[in-house]
Figure 1 (spheres, rainbow, N blue to C red):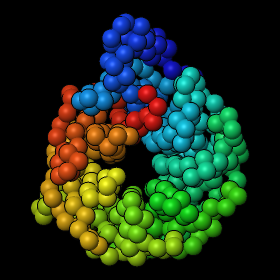
Figure 2 (figure 1 turned 90 degrees about the vertical axis):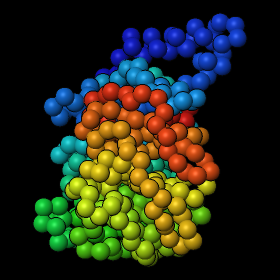
Figure 3 (figure 1 turned 180 degrees about the horizontal axis):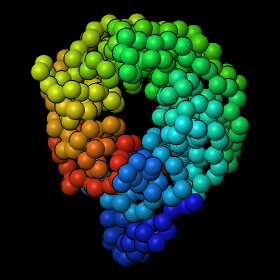
Figure 4 (figure 1 turned 135 degrees about the vertical axis):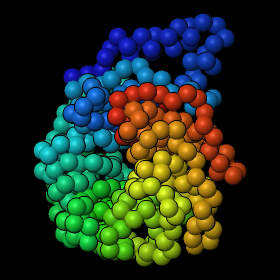
Length: 370
């Protein structure tokens, strides 16, 4: 296991050379690291977690190596201090892997006890990690050591419920878990149960505090909280809608429902939902329509501004870089990642840089540390 050292260190060596050359330190500082989650067991799949850089001036992405030996790392997150990475291993015998972000060596891994973990998050203290196990419809909790390693699972929470879509909602399917703005509660989105379950986390144990139900058959996939902590937005995968929810004290109340694509569009499956740091704009990736929907926040609801072609097929994950200047989209079915410059005033997205070709990208993680 480990990174392809020749490619990675070769790329880093270029940067080191720039630093040693008088007057060019700025050029070396103009790139930051980025990681790519992917599938490894699919035909034409990746060798592990992709490693690369992006140019902070224009968003141009490049690959520099791969952290090999990590199976189906379909979602990757970073510790608060940027020292460690954590990746799900989306297989029927689900696992989660810890990685040293400096050496890019695998630290250890633990079984989730559930099937096909597809998302994970760290609690605000950084002492616990929670995975969402899709096929088993469960959540798993792990303690995080000072050395970044993962301890044995402290809890597994089993969701219950189903929906009217017999192919996708025969049982619970936990798809996303994230803490609210205050860090007090974790919201777990379950596509199969048409629900968002909200939990408190104390001493490595989740305790349910509420359950919010969306329209039967909507298939909620991901959630994003507004910076004010009073509103959240739920992307529904199965009926191509976005729901604005009011939020207080661990309780979500669904409200306005809007379509994410125009009437008459091809079959579409929303995936990721994002809120800008200033709380004025919401973005959602449309798989099928192959676009990024842009909504403006208007009072207690949203207004559709328009759609930006994503420059690829089946955009599974979208994310901002730490500065909020760029948005990256992982386009699963076209094997590329695209970059967009973000107009802070209008929220408009403009393609920036050439698309990066990389095997089956399904997650993009711009690093906090360069």
